[in-house]
Image 1 (cartoon, helix red, strand yellow):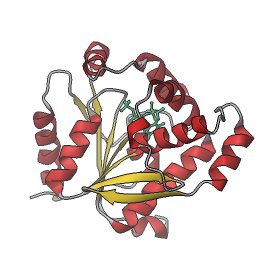
Image 2 (tube, rainbow, N blue to C red; image 1 turned 90 degrees about the horizontal axis):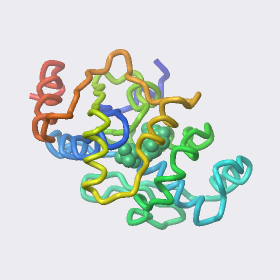
Image 3 (cartoon, helix red, strand yellow; image 1 turned 180 degrees about the horizontal axis):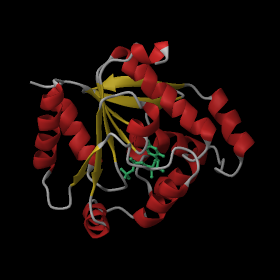
Image 4 (cartoon, rainbow, N blue to C red; image 1 turned 45 degrees about the vertical axis):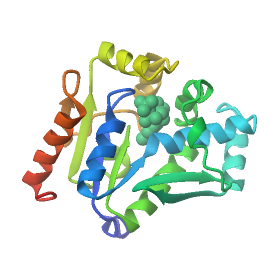
Length: 220
Ligand code: CDP
């Protein structure tokens, strides 16, 4: 194991496709464990929003690299959650704008962007125990954590959940882009515990995860 990975605190990885219920589950799980909650999708969204504000498209690779090199990207803790600031602005209220929904999968396939996000999450894991949600947390960002979960739900249920949030979001397009990209695609890590949440409440999913964590000794 690389020495920097030995410096990490405990990390619970929650991966899964769009609208699978990851966020509610990860946030509640973090609260119950007393761990910090980190949403990697929110970091990809914040970077996407920043690039859109600057008028830079994901296709303008040099422009993206330049914009990210000159931006100050920091994180802070707010109510047990890790939040991202870009040039000291917290873009939280813009993260689910439809223009961000439309562009985030194209931005997040760029290796330069993925490197920055992984580095931020590694920095977080050096100071706190974490529950991290995303697409490649168990497979790529924290491959050595023994605590990996993959939450899924049927396409129909995921569509309903997104519609109930009142969002315009083409999740099938995003799923396809996320699963078919060459760099860090959405995959089920081979040692992840898979949970189909189609017919489960958030509480039930959290309880199932806590029961698994109890078996591993992470939670008593
Ligand atoms: O909308 P939803 O909560 O399902 O997605 P999200 O977690 O906010 O992530 C938004 C987008 O960021 C995804 O569709 C991916 O394109 C990208 N993402 C990624 O590539 N890798 C991650 N670890 C997390 C998100």
